[in-house]
Image 1 (cartoon, helix red, strand yellow):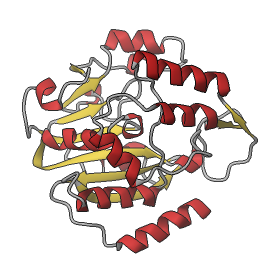
Image 2 (cartoon, rainbow, N blue to C red):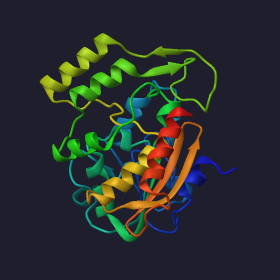
Image 3 (cartoon, helix red, strand yellow):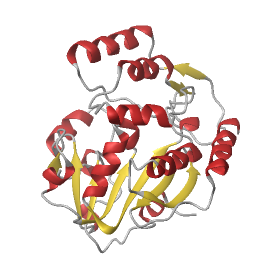
Image 4 (tube, one colour):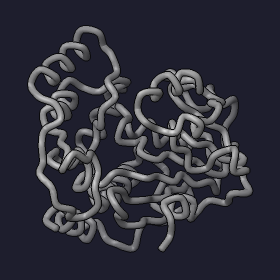
Length: 270
């Protein structure tokens, strides 16, 4: 059986230059292992160490951050266009206020044959279990509104519904355990107030997917000309996450749109 790292690196030419976005304390392609890679995150290494010092993680795994992102375009931040052979974003897209903009920013710095490798949480097997799957409408509306922070509605939905299962925030398949809410009304009310009054970014999962709902979303966004990246490789859920590689030169998946719709429904019923 392939390891998680092997699944994420499956379509990547590791001899090329790469960018890992938001690796935090768990990089997939660390510099110390010989990867030619730049790191983009929202804090410096020192800032990340301070953030995670009480989280029980391996702080030594946090790498030097080459680019600290604070809202600027990826081209501006990295100093060029079409320079990367590959980009890795593991558990990043669900945090983005504007998912379309994120995909297009990645495309803007990929070489013509470059790939974007994504690891995405499957909402069935993590704290998003009882939240609705995100549809096309919310994704497009957030993009056209040029959202840079999460909406009060998304913040409320998150805090009112995220759960743990037997004390875990992620699990594999049908592992037994009782659910309990992690937050509640006061958290939701406070979050709404912060977003509305301070226009602050709260680090939540804005978007929730099952594997085929995400495949359908990518296909639809491409067909509607919101993005140029297309599905290159899809790998179904392992543990609590699934994997997809996108490329500018990829073709549509063999599945028809109706087949993806029905597969997404089956994901939710399974």
